[in-house]
Image 1 (cartoon, rainbow, N blue to C red):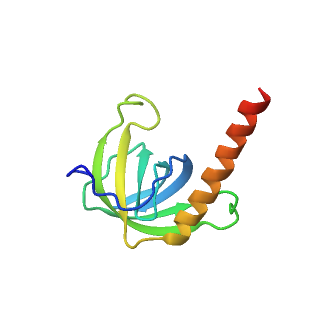
Image 2 (cartoon, rainbow, N blue to C red):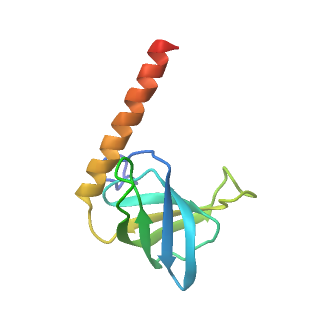
Length: 125
């Protein structure tokens, strides 16, 4: 493992609408992706400072009925080079207050469903 690599949990590249609150700012929308049971990379319209604490509210399919609240701390904030002048000019990496194995199980399930849909499309296309 690379000396810079600190991830200990599986990561899932899923784009999920996420509401974030805290850091003295109004509630706002972000897109959570590259999630694990310990953290996430978010894209958002406002920068946050490293060390800011936030609450994330996310719904993971197929369990859209339940909004999951996750406490987190900002560990990195950079300009989003993929959308510098667009709706999501910032990337924010957050570490969850505590590991969330239940969230990882939902992420894995949703990832598996998407993968099987992709595989089916490739076979029929």
